[in-house]
Amino acid sequence: MATPSTYVYDVTDANFQARVIERSRTVPVLVDFWAPWCGPCRMLGPILERLAERHAGAFELAKLNTDENPRTAMAYRIQSIPAVKMFKDGQIAGEFIGALPEAQVEAFLARFLPSEADRLVARADELAAAGHLNAAEEAYREALAKARVHPAAAAGLARVLAARGERDEALRILADYPNDPRAAQVRAEIQLQQVAGDGVDIAALEQRLAANPKDVDAHYTLGMALAARGEYARAMDHLLEVVRLDRSYKDDAGRRALIDLFNLLGDDHPLTQQYRKQLSYILF
Image (cartoon, rainbow, N blue to C red; front, top):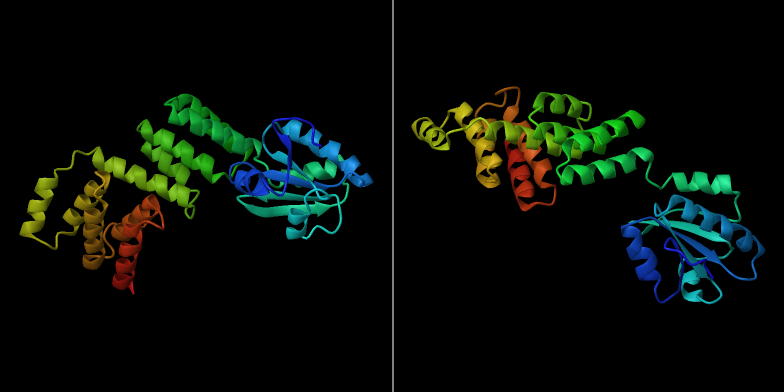
């Protein structure tokens, strides 16, 4: 039996799906397949339990007695014990067989557990959501000091800076992550903030376009202003027109704005799918 603990518990055939597979979508779950007669299991078990307590919730240890739960053992083709498998997001992320020394088990765990920088970013996200921007900025910067390349920390820091009006500094930070979707999303948010903060007269822009439907600058400014108001379909219509009329406008600003909006909405959003296809027709 497992030592009673928040982080260490026994699992069975009946609750394996809930306690391991589903739970691993929230926190990594390490499964120890063992049996009472197995000598190496008795050596490894206390090491795993000690590490689970030491990491205090960074992962959970689920112990499955293979004698009492043959269905799960058979499903995972357990032929030799102790067998240890790490589950993340409902899938096996890593595994080993045999009673490894504690240092080797710790090295195995390090591949799957949040780093110190990851924990700082999680804390910073909480602070930012609560409106404590200065404390969040400090935590994001500390994370970047510990892990020079950390897209989540950079995106979080940029969002905090932008919220304080420091948009140029935010964009400079994001420039180091040109292909990261989180950076692209924050970049789009900042550009929309810039337009929204400029007091754009939408009615005047519409009048300009009524007088001259080929006014590229009016299409672009109106598209960005509409996006800032959350009117994404109308915004994308105008930005597509920018691409049709003048691909070189402001260094391909129409296409870049559309890509940012796609990233902002996400790949699965119906507008992303619809307008990405239209953009492809124009470009190719």
